[in-house]
Length: 158
Ligand code: HEM
Ligand code: HEM
Image (cartoon, rainbow, N blue to C red; front, side, top):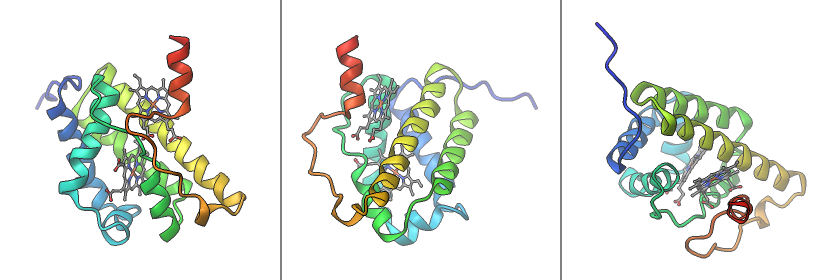
């Protein structure tokens, strides 16, 4: 059987398909599945549209995601410390799902941006630990539409 032709990510429906396929894997994963099912008790009906907004914003230039992605990860981390191993596993499952369904520049960007975010989250959590700040670390809610500083630098340069 020849491999089916994989297209690049082009629509919101593609983003949603990717996100759903990822969670199907992640929720039953022996290493990180329990974080979603037992600890966070993820409600996919609420979560899927939000995370689809996130990827639509990054990959397709939509403005449907308002920011604040780090916060739920602190909440989770306060219950079960998120380790480098958890993040590596998350990225592995994400890359596998992207590659299985799509191919192209946006598919590459989906993997690259997930890696940047994972590295940033992991390092922010670790820094908080080193400073003994985890419990007090909840950031103030960010204004809608706010992006992290890294993008503001980028905009200033553009
Ligand atoms: C068109 C291009 C891009 C878009 C639309 C985009 C969008 C986003 C969004 C929506 C978030 C989540 C923000 C939040 O919830 O607070 C994010 C996080 C992040 N992005 Fe991008 N991004 C882009 C390009 C880049 C580039 C070029 C870099 C670095 C070279 C980058 C590095 C990061 C990092 C490190 C984070 C995590 C920040 C943190 O929470 O510590 N992004 N991005
Ligand atoms: C071990 C790794 C990770 C775990 C266990 C995890 C788990 C979770 C959980 C439980 C939520 C909250 C869902 C809810 O209750 O609504 C969430 C939200 C989210 N996660 Fe992760 N996550 C991980 C890594 C990442 C990475 C690497 C990214 C970067 C692409 C990411 C992006 C997001 C976004 C955008 C949200 C939605 C935030 C919002 O509601 O606005 N996560 N994650």
